[in-house]
Image 1 (tube, chains in turn brown, red, purple):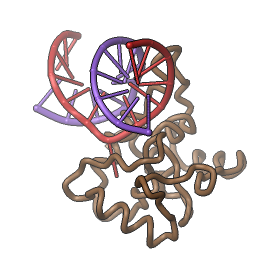
Image 2: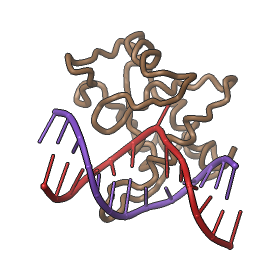
Image 3: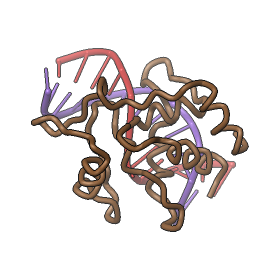
Length: 123
DNA sequence: ACAATGACATAAG
DNA sequence: GCTTATGCCATTG
């Protein structure tokens, strides 16, 4: 477990029920700057950290989806079906094409809240 | 230290 | 919208 991974967990732990966020948004919160061409750069690493969540942490990993509003889990422990079920438990509704509406469910934390979250980890 | 690998994000076709 | 190509970077072997 690395500092980066710990900070990812700290952010994910703060996502409230009924809201979702993207890998790129988490990366942006951690201060990783968007790249010139390929878009935000660290989201891939965020996914990598989420793929190795210790079971005893009890994180709401299912509230993180990709930028197009779709589920992109490929873990055998946390399958796409499980993720969808957990999200629906949160009250999140899917469109007919299996997507989630950002306008309705995007998590938008206040700056003060983010500062507090990040203050609990290194950086 | 180096190379390979992804639960990503964009731009282009 | 969907598919393909390209860039990124923290992790891992």
